[in-house]
Length: 410
Image (cartoon, rainbow, N blue to C red; front, top):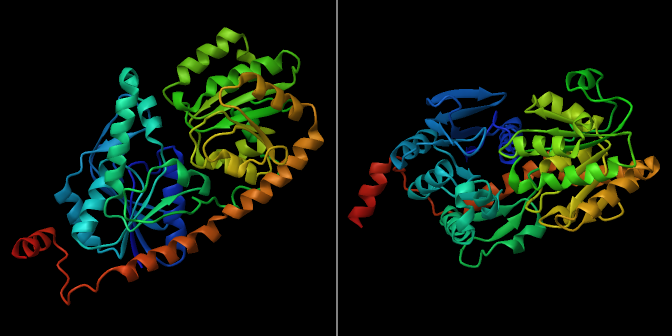
């Protein structure tokens, strides 16, 4: 099978969307399928790259001034149609709602290629990350929702990464059925074992303290100030704890200022962006993973930490309650409840046996999201939508000009 994946956020960009698309591409290619990812260039100029076992077609791009580590492609429909028609995929899988995803969907529909669309984001998050839109948050969110609907027009299936978020989106206006398929994680990479010693010195992490971690974007939508304030409260009566914030984002400087304001600088480490291999070790260093973000459709970083047998303290919002079972693998607290976060952290900090028991349960839950089980689900879905398409003509008009000409003659 030939599969084209369109993604506006792709490796080496650091985000859950980029991680999910890369994991899918590598998994499909490892099972013998021919995979091409279309994504923005990291240098601005178009090029072809190879990542392990699949090809990436990079399109011209520009940086976004309000989002670190994110570029937007200047793709045109004619350019995307040329890429799609030359590759001749059996199915196109769209992952994002920006220019690459939308133009790939249009090209595929014009060329009568079935499309599967995965949603990874909530429109409110995109609005929160653009400060200029804050005064018009409600209409801007509405417009982003309407724009998102465009992505799904023409798709044969719409995928959400968890069952619990299917009801959060108004999908009745669309003809395509929606279903849940996990993004998946590679359990052979994320598994419980002692961390390698270099990770402590590399990121100046103490070896004799209970480590609390966040790994992901340091953006305003993540409500990370809640975790910082809760940590400060717990620190007042537990001096053997340390907070590690892994990642970068538009709220990073504000968080550093908050840590300084609270007088806890010596107890907090900001690592910045880290290499992929360091992520595994940072999860293993961790004792407790925190998720104060109320807008997660799955939270791959949390799943990775759970796979390393780490308990979680998270907000009871989005999809998190599907993965965190209160008082079994972690604790769920109300959104922005600093006191609730602090109390939950306190219970886990002072009870290592509970942390171990919760971590064991967390690993069991993570095992249901093994990428080696997820990839066959995607393959079966691709075959299903391919079978639904009408038989192509004997000489399939792959060029966009041929398709448009044929339509004009009708």
